[in-house]
Image 1: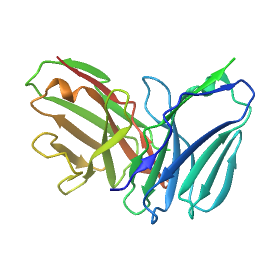
Image 2: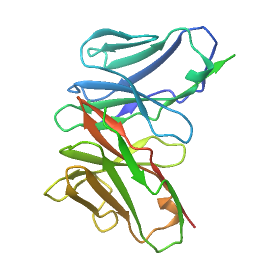
Image 3: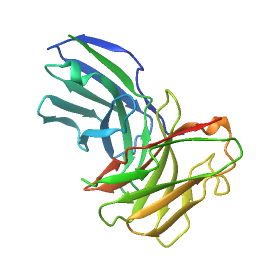
Length: 111
Length: 112
């Protein structure tokens, strides 16, 4: 059974620090990887996606993918209290758009 | 990105009844997806709704319990049938756009 694993947290970081969120996946054939942010009571919103090994940067967010280690991470620089949310890692099949979601990591940014 | 709306946003239902959730996308999409998010849990895919054919259900979900309609390329419904308290969840529809999935605002269902 395909699995996506995340530490549930909470991960607490001070305002202005770097938050590092990690995710591992079991299906070595996975092609696409996504990070969603979910505020309490809201639906998930896409933060970043990454398809190739290495780093991908978008503003304060950097996604890192290592397919050999089956590992994907999300770095949030200059963390703000508004970043406090649950971050969901999703692994997808680009052909079918079917995603498997991790259980999410709750991030708390302390002012 | 796709703009997705859902109705109702929330409902409280009695055991044994059924609820139909509507999902509308602002553009034509081939596939739409229905997810369930139980309290404190992550998202679990219920089924893929394909226009012009039967929905494809994931393991553990059956058509009799979660019938799905997909009358056109912008609309789908999910019915939660013969509800029990264990069906209390947030139900989300999603649709792909530019290689990624976007989610509707969700329907929060409470079954008493």
